[in-house]
Length: 582
Image 1 (cartoon, one colour):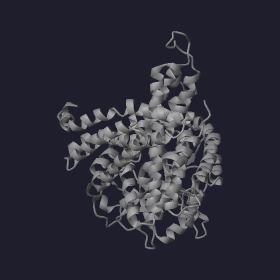
Image 2 (tube, helix red, strand yellow):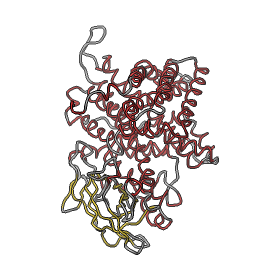
Image 3 (cartoon, helix red, strand yellow):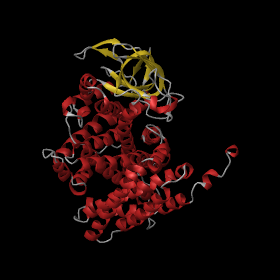
Image 4 (tube, one colour):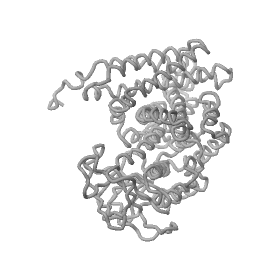
């Protein structure tokens, strides 16, 4: 297998030429942070991923995590790698300095997540879920709970897990049955069973802090009666020393299609001691702080797997001799064949645009937290909310499709374990399902996010894209990607208008197509930015950007027309067949 090559040249190009990272940081008052520092951090992170995490990827897949006498054992090398990950300071990269974090911009964190996902998706869930849990605690817990849990979680000494799903209550949290009874001392006794709990237990040492959704005795029915609790694996003293084991255990590990190294647990809470996070019956609000962070991370998982699969497939295509060239001579490397090039360019066009869109969104997250103007903070927060379901669903859809296409480049060898491609396909598949299936993300986009600010948020985003397309056209001439993105944006505006006030069935029938159309426009916008920047130089790197931008414009953006036509067809083709006829 080809050794993973961290995309640091691309990160540098995006930071300096496309995203105006230095200007964004200066606006936030972080003048000590610039593109050069970010690239240095990312280079070191990429080295760790390539040298420590990638070699464990196949080992983890083949050994898997296992449950032995109620103890979870992770695959060979994982615990040592996690300790090295902690020692490198990677768990605290973007965390709050008030609790021991480094406070670096979120773009460094998101692109670190890309490289972790590219080299070892199973491993990445351990720190990723911990980070999501810390964000929920930081946003909603009492000062005492923050002081107890945030420092060791941010340092990596303790880890975190999200315990939300039950066998009868997946997306529909109103059906949740786990209970929490007051103990009379400020703590609660939590009883119930949760399923699909990633990182629910492991052998890395330290505490494992579960955030558990449960109902109080006086809880109203439905989602308005759900509260969120911290339930640690071990009780701890004020100074952090672990004491008694809590009344929680792993009932089983799920046997899964992929991410075998990640322990996906059935968790039993048998009167486990927990502490309320935030207000009673407001657990769903607190949960979504965690869920939204995880949804961005999951989108980046799709991007990371696609990038890694592309590297392997491109290297194979340059070396593999098969067939005749256009002049009849042969055998030739399969990179000479148009269909192989088409598959590779499909992947690369997504990966490079997705990386840029992720970076832009990360800057908006920092603006939402740290911009000196409250109005600008609110504006950035709203646009991140709008883009979160798009990034989660589109990146994981394109990511899985990319893994399949990369596997196809290998032909029969792609189906054989030794080349590693079939693992990419199996691992990538879960990202379309967990943290809210992609269908749920699409319905959320159409049903909730388009209505943000009475529709002003999405229209403001469209206006921003349109203005930047005009500016890019004035500077460079009407490049194909700019013209085609304008056309796709017009289709997206029309589809958006048609869905305002739509019935549940109309919105549901259109949602998945609408989200993909939205993603294509957003990626076209990023390609327009990148193409405009690339026209300023004649290096091979910049010439390649222009070529891939043209491919995206002429071979991928035309999908927008078919998607818009499907949306315009309405719900009738979807709902006409009677249920009993299926």
